Image 1 (spheres, rainbow, N blue to C red):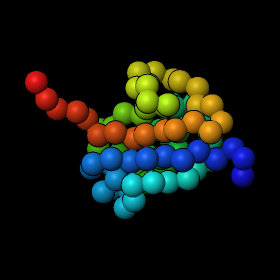
Image 2 (image 1 turned 180 degrees about the horizontal axis):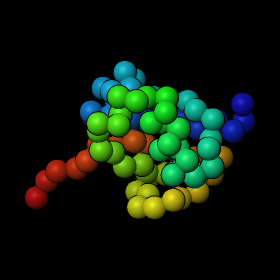
Image 3 (image 1 turned 135 degrees about the vertical axis):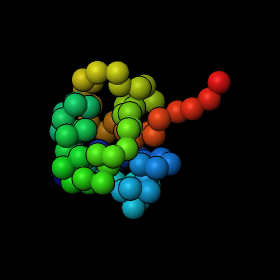
Image 4 (image 1 turned 90 degrees about the vertical axis):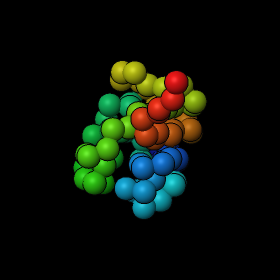
Length: 79
């Protein structure tokens, strides 16, 4: 149980998950986490999202340390 991570979801992502918070086992990196989330929540396949670990956006495979704060964010818009 010590290898659990708390995930916060926002906007459309939270709607698809049906929750704003999840607790999952830590897959080790953001790429594996994305695969795990899409397997468990196939409704998210139609939604673009990005993952942030400890408030830093992951542009590629990023390590997820134990106890990290992970957020799943919908695409941003703005100008």
